[in-house]
Length: 281
Image 1 (cartoon, rainbow, N blue to C red):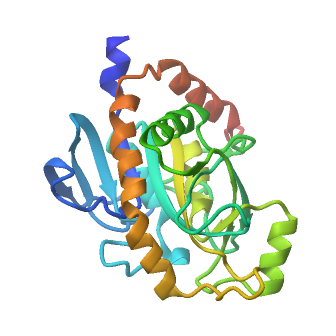
Image 2: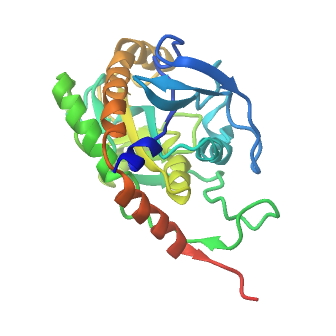
Image 3: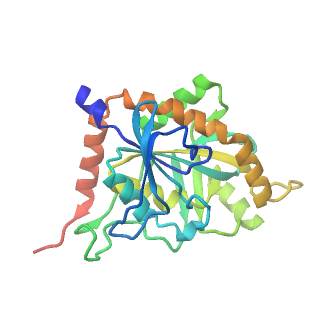
């Protein structure tokens, strides 16, 4: 069991409140390349509470990359190449449910995909990609075991959380029309964002344990008599609540490192291998 404990390395995508040099001990910046191009920014490698971690700002550290233009494949590939076993990510989202209030945390368990322009597989037939076609199962897109750790930690910290939720990812960068927002509610979506897909899909293809801490910043635009979502309010709520996501992550990381993941990793790897159709010779 000791061997499996040593193998854990945690990739963190997002960075709200987590780009502080003091959080990461022995911080080193690495600019890397991948078969899919460059990631959003440097990988920041170091330790959090004695656990190997790699931070990556999804939109770049200056927030210059819009959701459609994020190189999701390069980001996930780079973290996998760096030896990550887990991806813990943070995301801002709009709430589509009365009970999910701005400032609340949702530990996502399902998604609905409304993106249109994003490559969703590493197996794209190009000369530098892995061989074959990958039909990855997505019934349970987020890692159940990692989610459980996040839920327990959040409860112990006394943070108000919703233990599950379906995120609907839109292409963006615009926000929804009211008609869309109302339709997404009817579809059963709980929150809405612009980045979960294809990140979660690619993490599954890469065999990584992926979990997302979603923070509601607004009520999108479905609520009557409510101020429609605007960037200023989103940023204000993010700033006020970034410490919640940060405290969950920082407390969860040592727990994850002390857990035996060998069986989970074995299942993830087998799932990927079963999903690849290799070319006939």
